[in-house]
Amino acid sequence: MDRINKYIASCGVCSRRKAEEYVLSGRVKVNDIIIKDLAYKVKEEDIIKIDDNIINKEEKKVYIMLNKPKGYVTTSHEQFGRKSVLDLIDEDVRVYPIGRLDMYTEGLLLLTNDGDFANKLMHPKNKIAKKYIVTSKEKITQNQKELLESGVNIGDYITRPAKVNILTNNQFEIIISEGKNRQVRRMCEAVRVNLTNLKRIQIGNINLGNLQTGKYRYLSDEEIKSI
Ligand code: URA
Image (cartoon, rainbow, N blue to C red; front, top):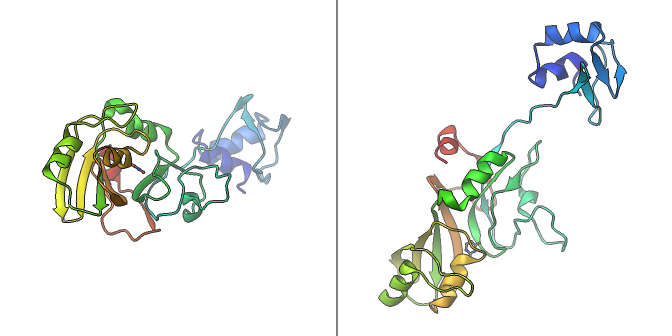
């Protein structure tokens, strides 16, 4: 762990030199005891105060794109012993998934420790578009395409307009700007499309590209700003 003056500086409070002055002049407390020893090394559980105000280490913001494999859950607290996407992330800071992908859905999943960024992406008013590739047993008909595009009843909700592009005899892309639970699967069920695979490939302007399944990378500044 860091020495006390380095730790204080890393909290963004002041420079290391200034922090030394604070320590030597008795303005710094560790767990409510004044510490004047510059060699003191801060422990994880220590509560550091300057002039009786608690200071916290500024956490580095991390923005990650993962190509989620099938068979992994996106919940942070997995209770049933299933594999979690968090097992695939090796970072010093804790990140959490932005939104969900079903256990058997693969593809683009964003993770972060930046709550504002996550909120922006998730808030329905921002209507961020998400693109999925659906693999189906049979080619979808023109009628099914039109139904998916104009909105379908998925039980408790009528979906907003979507865009469908037919790619091949058994694949099409669908772009939706909302995120109801299992929405694409339920839309396909509603119009009797036999979905055999579901993969998310884009969120807003952020594209999965050729990232390998199970691998992750940091978002670029441009990608972060695009949200
Ligand atoms: N729609 C689904 O059906 N499942 C997902 O994981 C995401 C969107």
